[in-house]
Length: 308
Image (cartoon, rainbow, N blue to C red):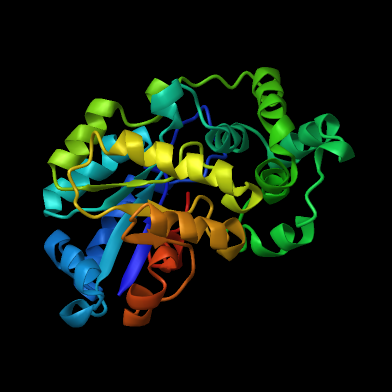
């Protein structure tokens, strides 16, 4: 069985000419391909697979996952899934609902979408000093991040600096300065699915899962900080989700992005399964022994999944 990961599914916006997204027309074509080639697992099949920890007759089918609870998921993805009688798992970072603010990770995406990558990287390096980058794991993050993304010059370097290298003590301030410099100003209410939208997703048979509170690289946080990220996100979702199975998705993904503390917290919180990013199929071994790090493919690894 293969889990497939999506982020932005939308149409072109001339305000962000360099924005990376999957066009809704290609999303529709990819669903046609999956339905014809693999089949897509039903919600009842999936729940049974998780409870029994066996794939069984669903071997080879696909399950669809969507990260970050962005408005485009409600405006574009939900109608397409509903039309086909399909469902998906939607992973929600909850800080935008608990504080009504844009997450730094998405402000970075908007900066990358609005600007030439080289221009952005030059601006970042003019603001970031060496004392803001204390992370001893710099080489590990350099060698293990954005390997499946084909970005314009300067984009991967900019995202590494802001997502992985810079200390969280300085990160928000630097991003705010960049957004002010380049006049990037998007309201959280316009960017994310509304609370009513999340309720509607749940009502239509979609699964809502935790994507932490504020989408940090969890391996950069201590146990207390990680626990707060996970517990507070589930506390918010508990008031919305009707699913009896708790699910979580590691922000950024990849084994560099979380650690054994993360897994222990997820187990203590009674989370039934979590998704990582790893390009291979889910096996019974994953379900039975590694349920907090199940593999997912990026949609760009399949036909019609290339970002525009």
